[in-house]
Image (tube, rainbow, N blue to C red; front, side, top):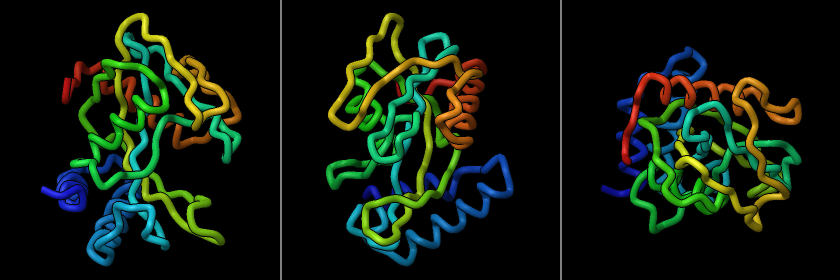
Length: 186
């Protein structure tokens, strides 16, 4: 299955927890139907991306990156690449690339959807973000990449003000999934 096909399958099967995310799910599926390149940054109107909240092994903390363009504390995430086979692959690859942590275990997902304006194609483009969570092994040490100004662990219930509600929601949903014993691809 192609990355595009995987995205259609994942979003078709996902049951959103809120009416707002159901509207986004339908919007994302329509975008996929309308654009063969919807998975790639070359899709000027907008493209699907994957974000991953990296949780500590016990789920008490989330690793956030100080994003150089947004100037906010955000989860790891980014663009799909042609070599990616699934949204889950994108989520795990981006989490590893931006955190430097090996052995991340992706929880079942997606956990959330978000749509936000970005700088890919000025004056306006959109990330249609499919969001996951991953668990770091005990004692994991993050390594700052070129894509980050800083990396820090924060308590899930004390994410800094210089963040957003989508980050808080994803971290809380990841923590709840981990607490319920959900494991996916590990």
